[in-house]
Amino acid sequence: MKILVCVSKAPDTTSKIAFKDGNTKFEDNGVQWIINPYDEWYSLVRAIELKEKEPATIIHLVTVGTADAEPIIRKALALGGDEAIRVNTDNSDSYYTAAQIAEVAKQGAYDLVFTGKETIDYNGSSVGAMVAELMDIPYISLATKFDVAGTVATVSREIEGGEEVAEVPLPLVVSCQKGVAEQRIPNMRGIMAARTKPLKVVEPATVETLTSVSSYELPPAKAGVKLVAADNVAELVRLLHEEAKAF
Amino acid sequence: MSVLIFVDQSEGHIKKSSFEVLSYGAKLAEQIGATAEAVALGTINDEQLSALGKYGVKKVHHINNEILNHVDAQVYAKAIADTATNTGATVIVISHNQTGKAIAGRVSARLKAGLVAGAIALPETSNGFTVKKTVFSGKAYANITITSPIKIISLNPNSFHVIEGEGIAEVIAVTAAIDTPKVKVTAVNKISGEVPLTEADIVVSGGRGLKGPENWGIILDLAKVLGAATACSRPVGDAHWRPHHEHVGQTGIQIAPNLYIAVGISGAIQHLAGVNRSKVIVVINKDPEAPFFKAADYGIVGDAFDILPQMTAEIKKLKGIA
Ligand SMILES: Cc1cc2nc3c(=O)[nH]c(=O)nc-3n(C[C@H](O)[C@H](O)[C@H](O)COP(=O)(O)OP(=O)(O)OC[C@H]3O[C@@H](n4cnc5c(N)ncnc54)[C@H](O)[C@@H]3O)c2cc1C
Image (cartoon, rainbow over all chains, first blue to last red; front, side):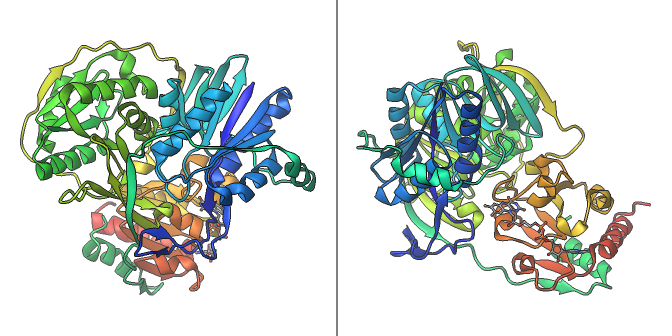
C-alpha cells in the first residue's frame, strides 16, 4: 500500500497575528512555524500506525511550498515516512495547491491520500475535496476513524449531530481529525534518520489560480468585559436578558 | 443570471443552516441583480420546498432520488455542479457545515470555480467579487477576491441572520442520472435528543475547573433551562469527562453561537480559536487573572459551584419555570 500524506506549514498556535505591506501579507517576522497540527497529529500519525501494522506500506509526504518549508517537512520525516516531495511554489490559492497535490498523487499511483481536516491559518477545509475531485475518486471528510483491509477502507466521519460509518474502495482521499490516531512525539532516532531520507523537489504544474487575497484585517477589539459581583448573579442574568438580548 | 443555493437536509428535514444560506443567497442575488434559486437533493416533501420561497428563492430544483438521502461528496458535487451548469448559475452558495466541507471543494474543482470557504459576510461586488472570511482560526479576517467566472461561497454557520418574508417557490422536479456512490454507508450514529453543537444558539461549556465528570450536573442544568448545547475544553474531552464530540477549540469544533458561557475554562488561545466568533461571551472563573476575561463580554469572578446553581435559578424565575 502507498500512502501520500499532505503536510503544510502553519504558524504556531500561540503566534501573534499581525499583517504587513498595507495589510496584504501575514507578518511572519518572529513567527515559529510548525507542521499544521491536523497534518501531524492525525494524518501523518495514522499513516505511521498503518505502516507499523503493515510494514510493506510506503509513506510519502508532499508539501506545496517554497524552500522555507523544508525544516517543517524534515520534522515530519522525523516522525515517520519514507521520503518527501516538495512542489516548489507558493501555496497561495487552495485550488492551485490542490491541483499540484493531485498531480503528484496521480504520478505516484497512491492508494490513499491523507490531508488534515484544515490548515489552522486559512481554515478552508477544502483542499482534500478538491484533490479527490481532480482525481475522480471518493473523499471522506472529517474522518474520526480509519482502517483498511485489503482494498477496502472502513471509516467513520463527522456529520451534523453524529457520525457516519462507511466502507470505501481504494483509492481515496481522507481528511483526518481528532480520533483517527493516537498522539506521539518524534524520538532522537527518528530525527537522525530524517536527515538521510530523500527530499525531492519538483517544479509546479501550470495551473491557474481562482482566488487571491486582497487584504487582511483584525477583528475590532472587544469593548472590555463587564464584571458582575459574585453575590449579584441576578444582575448578570438581567444584563444577558435585557442588554445583550442573549436569550 | 442566477445565484444557486444548496439546501442541506437530514432525514427529509431542511437544516437551520440552509435557512441562513438561503437568506444570504437571496440578499446576494438582489445585490447583483440575479434571481435566487435553490437546489435540493434526496427525499423532501414539496410543501417544505415551496415554503423556501419565504427566504427569497424563486425556484427550487429538486432531484428526488433516494440515493441522495446520504451525503456522498462525489455524487452530490456532480449533481450540484450539473444543476449550476444547467441553470446558468454564476454564484453557488453552500453552508460551511459538515456537509459543505465534504462537497464545496469538489464542486469548486469540478467547475474550476473559485471558492471562499468559511465566508462571514456578503461579498463586496462594486469592483470585482471579494468575500470576507475568517482566517487564523478566528483571530483575523481575509478579504478574498474570486477571479473565476463562476464563484462559490461557503458560509460559516451562524454568521448571517435568517430573513423570513412571504413567498412560495416554484418546485421543479429534475430528473438526472445519479451514479451509484462508491462509498457504502453501513451505520449512522446520531447523538439523539441534543442540539447539534454547531447549530446551537446558546452553548454552556465546562473546563478543568469543574474538577471531575461527576460535577457536570450544574452545567447540564443551566444548559437545560437555556435550551443550550453543552461543550467542553480539550483536557476535559481528553480525560473522557465528556464525549470527544463536545470538545471545542483549535483542534476541536469551531462554533459561533449567540451566547457562549465558559465555566472553569482558563481561556487558552487554542480554546479561544474555537469560540471567539460567539456574539456574547460570558466567563465564570474563580481566578481574576484568567485570560478568558480579556475575550469576554460579561463575567463573574467566583466559584462555579456557587454561581451556576444561582444562574439556573434566576433564569428559571425570569422564564417563569417552576
Ligand atoms: C496545539 C494545541 C492545540 C490545542 N487545542 C485545544 C482546543 O481545541 N481546545 C481547548 O480547549 N484546548 C486546546 N489546547 C489546550 C489549551 O492550551 C489549554 O491547555 C486548555 O484549553 C485548558 O483547558 P481548561 O481551560 O479547561 O483547563 P485549565 O487551563 O486548567 O483551566 C481551568 C480553569 O478553571 C478555573 N477554576 C478552577 N476551579 C474553579 C471553580 N471552582 N470555579 C470557577 N473556575 C474554576 C481556573 O481558575 C482555571 O482558569 C490546545 C493546545 C495545543 C498546544
